[in-house]
Image 1 (tube, rainbow, N blue to C red):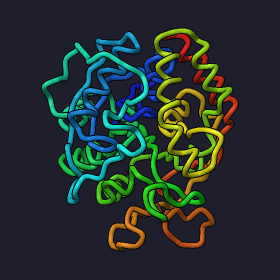
Image 2 (tube, rainbow, N blue to C red; image 1 turned 90 degrees about the vertical axis):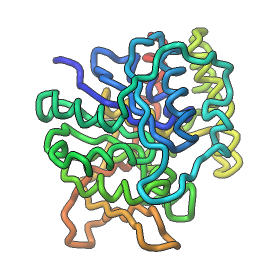
Image 3 (cartoon, helix red, strand yellow; image 1 turned 30 degrees about the horizontal axis):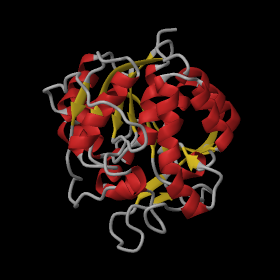
Image 4 (tube, one colour; image 1 turned 90 degrees about the horizontal axis):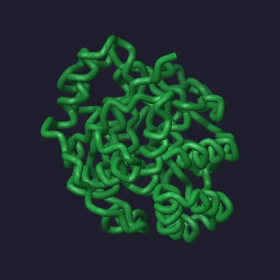
Length: 313
């Protein structure tokens, strides 16, 4: 079976970096057509740079990287340096990239690629705010029917929120974009906090990354060393959740995840619950299901896959 064609839309971010590394380490399953950067965890000039740093760390400098939207559809950008540090990749010391940034805008690349490839063969993998994907859908509504699947990290139900009491960061940064994406009609699979908060980098799991003894293994260990301090203090957890690699892992090993096909709506009108993913987990409304909302993960299987694949780079 040929590898699945994907576009990774991202705002790196240490956990985004690990998601990219996992995808690039899995060419038998995933064909990374390109990586599109969006403003999110840090501003765009850093996310596009960080995406290229990660590609070079992986030994994949031929990967196409595009810069996209530098602000949400209609709001001021909210960033997360308090979690990821001033560069977004604080922790390891990594050299500036030498590989080029592509001239084409990320949104144009997404539209062009979906139109050029056979219908239903390209999966979009958003790991940050959904601005690039929403703008592409607004400019070219015809691409919605051409998307194989949108597999995204964002939202929450039982875990509720991590940037406000009711909202997860990626959705909160651009709720209007999320509303566009969830209404587009393409198949959507969601990796919410309910799943990602179970993918904790414990001391033992981080030691396994470091024990790989490779530049990638050591860099990943140093990244999680850095950003786990925030989550440990906030949640009292045993380590930091690896949110975004759940997207890459799902594409490689969907059997590691379980969830339900439900309706998910995005709150855009309330100051109190702005960016909330209103997930009808219990089926109490008559709203039609529009997403597969994951609820659980085999964490040991996930970390075994991640460690093995990182060891390939």
